[in-house]
Each structure stands twice: as C-alpha cells, then as structure tokens.
Length: 254
Image 1 (cartoon, rainbow, N blue to C red):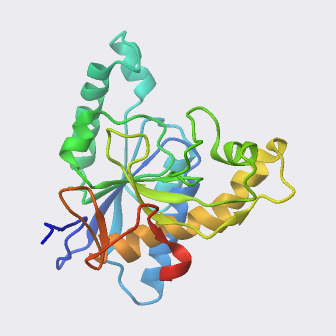
Image 2 (image 1 turned 180 degrees about the horizontal axis):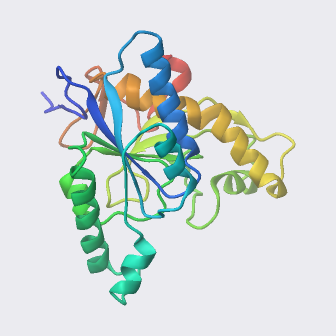
C-alpha cells in the first residue's frame, strides 16, 4: 500500500493560502473572486487567502490585495541584492532572502499552501524544504511537451511547433525540476488564425479561457477539499486514485 499524504489534510479550519505576486496580479484576482463567489453562495470555502507577498512592492497585484483588505508583506528582491552587493542569482543570497520572506509571511499566518501567481523569482531550496509539496504554480502551456525551452513564451513555442491548440497547466513545484508535477490541465484554447505577432492577444485568451478556470478549481475544489494526495515516489492521487503523467483534465472532472 502506497503511503499517500494529502497536500492539505482536511481539518475543522480553513486552509491558509499565501499568494506570491510580482506583476499585474490577474491570476491572484481570479483566485480571490472565486473565493468570494463561494462565500456569496453560502458555501463557506475550505480555504482563504490570508496574506499576499511580493518582491516588487509597487506592483499592481499589491493594490488588488489592499482594495480587498488582504494583508500584504513585501521585500524588494532588487533592493535586497543591491544592499548586499551580490548578484540576484547567487544561491546564498537567495536563501537569505527567502528566510526573510518566510519570516514575513509567517508573521501573518502559517501557510498551508503557497500559490505562485505570477511570481517572477526563483525560490531557493529553503522554500522547498520548509513547504514540501505545498507550493503550486501555473504555466500557460502543456508542461509535458518535449519541445519546451526556457526564455520563449509557451504560445510562441506552440506555434513554432505547428500546434493548433494549447492548454494551461497547474502544477506542484518540486524545486529540482523546471515544472514539477502536473495537477490539472485546462480545456484546449484555439490558436487558429494567430501568429507570433499576436502574443498579447493569445496570452489574454489563455488567461480568460484556461488559467482563470483551472487555478481556482485546483486550489479550492481539489487541494482545500482534501482530494489531492502524493506518495513517497511523487505520484499524485485524486481521491486515492493515481493521476496520469499529464495531470487531471478539467473537462473530465467538472
């Protein structure tokens, strides 16, 4: 029998969420609006965004949090590296920075789940040790595609490989791999009649037709409901049944 551990074990309290942002905060907004919709329907969600952290204190995502009375903690990663006169990519600096970040977020709550919603900074091993299997992220493409390379946006890579559709993917961060373990893939989004010059329009379409559906669903309907588990071999499970290598398909579970 596999030793399956829940990503979040269902208790008599809500799952505490810490959201990390660096930019516009559109995916963070989608998460919060989904939470509010659950609250307004009379179904108290089993998860709540307790704190927002940013490494870019003046980013738009901060204002979204403030407008909705969600606590914000920030620490400029740029200023941090400047003060220490060290490269932002230095691993030791990254650990010192992340230690400070952990202290900041835990001054507000003990997070059960960390959601990277457009967080543009690589986490150090400190985070993966502290919050093992408790960090999720989102990618506007299918993370199992063999042609993926760093530095090129997912839709452009899809077009260059003659793809006519694309899916977004929610995945569990692992630290030792680029993407980690797929949790949930969106329905397909058509790339028909688009070219590389249309990247902004494509990204907008992926957000609206894919990301804003699967990200909240993974958080509030799967993880917070104690439906997702993982074993010692890093195999994911839904309701104790193993999940395939590409993750769950949104169209099959809604």
